[in-house]
Image (tube, rainbow, N blue to C red):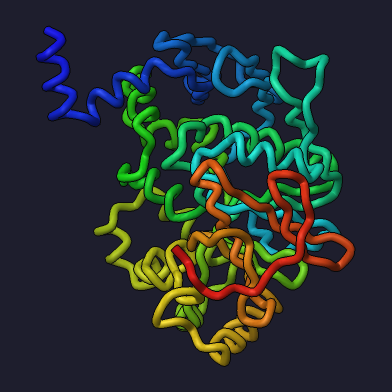
Length: 371
């Protein structure tokens, strides 16, 4: 029997990985069901379920998985039309890819959230907002690849509400991996989550559909946001975007309305083909890879966008780097590896990069050796 199992695992490796992954802790996965909230966890391979009344401030206490209580303060059916903000303090991270521990470490090391609290041992570290009226930008790709996607999403969900209450903001921008998952493209999903979904009796994309608390929250988010004179997005924009004759808020709305569309449906509409294509804001790499956008073209792009700077992720570097004479910051600092990671910081009119150790360092110019 053991030999048979070994042979099966050798030939159907993904199935064995899913089975093993399903024994891990994960949750909560919360859904709107008949006016209530159904929260489910997978704890050591066993499903735990709680049904809660949906009221303002519905509270989900931790069971396993994410270690802190969660307040469901809003149903998020609509996206904000606001795309331009002003802030004295900014922090930005990109491409978390399920590396919750790295995300938490960066946020704690730079005072965005609290540190360890001895009085809250059962809830893990203090995960509450400490950034006041500052703005935190997450420039896409929270999901896929890594093993703690659920924890990363709930942390940001909590901070979103807490930041607003403190006069700040959390801007969660969608990346190509969020759009892929919503469209049932599961090439990069960690095996753990295929196992979790299977144990919960769901297909993985259903964890992010319109009945899911996290799914609705993600669907309320933007693709692009401007803070002060800087425009943030996941990947970038080719100058040809101007041919669409769409404002930033219109681009955000077109994405929101099309989330979950199949590739065939996207190809039927010219503007969606561009937005979801290799020159659009969730895939473009032309600032870093051949044929690289010329400096003059980049300057014209900034003029068309009416900003002085772009901040993008998506293309992995060894850390946060400066390009085009400081008018572009790349912030995909290889957090996905689970070993590296930096955070972009702006305060007192100065841009810096922050390390996992809490250091604040200058931002070096890039040699464009992306990998």
